[in-house]
Length: 206
Image (cartoon, rainbow, N blue to C red; front, side, top):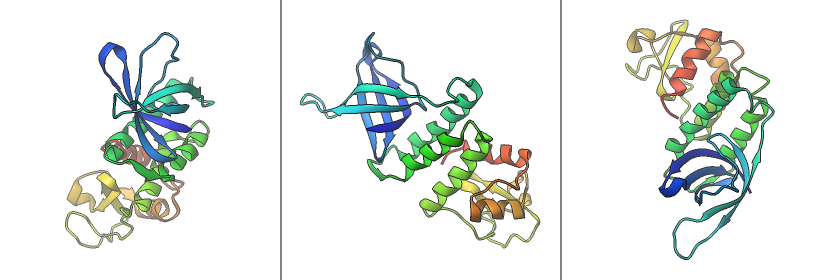
């Protein structure tokens, strides 16, 4: 099976507890340290097998093959990708069966990560995630004061919740650009400053 590594925890003798988003599941597996093992890291897409153990409640990760991205050797792209994938661990850590959505979301994002602005790819992916989970607030009502936002600029806080700029005291985003993002999952009308703002909000957590 294939999956994306979203977390690594070192345990005794450099063994690892590895958390992987696969198609349908969130796998937490044990990987024994050994010279024959290739290196793995957060963000890597791997092909792997699970092996059950009578001595442990956690299955063993085995037969790992790294499935590389075309952009894997670009440090800046890899760092942004790892920052993005780390967010999924905290968000999904109490889940087991998660359906195909998250795997396919990451698959689609990884395909275009090296050809488009990766922050824009992450932001558009996150809006799809919010909609999938029923958390995308398309109604332009301020989360902090509950009044309608009639201004041409809208601020957002964690989970892309809309607010008046004067309520959250944060950078405003063009209302039409935010509408395009929320309804069409497109960052086309966002300028780079607005993209950086949304990226920083995204890093606060999914």
